[in-house]
Image 1 (cartoon, one colour):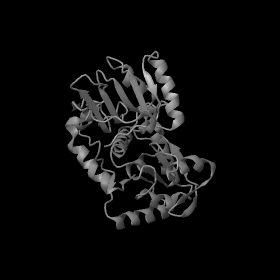
Image 2 (cartoon, one colour; image 1 turned 90 degrees about the vertical axis):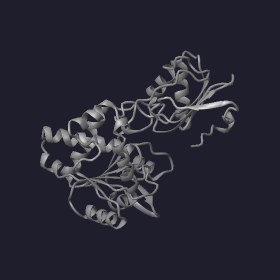
Image 3 (cartoon, rainbow, N blue to C red; image 1 turned 180 degrees about the horizontal axis):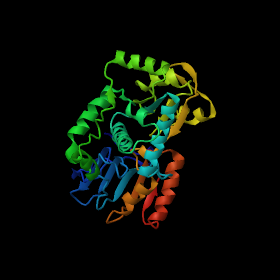
Image 4 (spheres, rainbow, N blue to C red; image 1 turned 135 degrees about the horizontal axis):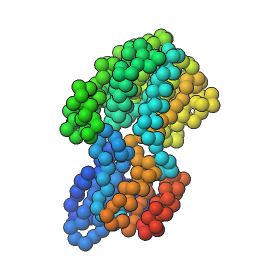
Length: 333
């Protein structure tokens, strides 16, 4: 993965005499720490810093030291919901679908986000079986469609990586549970089967959950579901990740609650479905997690360069980080 800095800050080429190390940063993707073999600065170049408490990944651990840290800032201006709150909100959205006879459409990237959602849904279903609620019978028959061949493939790989799961996830396995393979999970592979599922859910009163890519609705199978269901109030769309400006996901998230519209494949579609956002499932660390990553380093870096965030967010987090480090760290936004 290439790591580029804003042009005004230049680039971080590989040091001429350096070795690459991989401490346990618990990152979702892309991170490299260049440890100098001479006396040049140590540079930590990070991709997405994973949020802590993700049961399928080790918690992020800061390196002991780095002179320069290149750090993302996607959610540098907010704090995510705690796990209990997000699970209850997720359950509430599904309860609404059970009562309305509609589908909960969840745009999600195939790697990471999808597996965490499957893990969470298995827990909700398990709790329903242990202590049935008012819609217990409907919960028992609720299908969870994983409509993404790539996501299905990587979910299989995640299952094979159980030795690397955290203690909570391993405990569930020991208890005879299958966190990523609940009995109500239905994987859809063939494109014809996907199209048939879209038509059936759009026309029927069958409650269902659909997880499909892409996460920002810029393409992929989720677009077909949205085109077929966005204009029907029985359905709900649940965003669990960042929606960048200019993407269909951002338009739906912004204008959907106001009764607006979105253009998909050149077709203007009125948004009548319920639109919900849960930030707690983001694979990006929030403001406090990002801050702790820096402040828990044994030796504070001389400089932190913020990337991967909107301008206003980078500036806000830069001010916060300067204050949190007592202005000991130079922060470039």
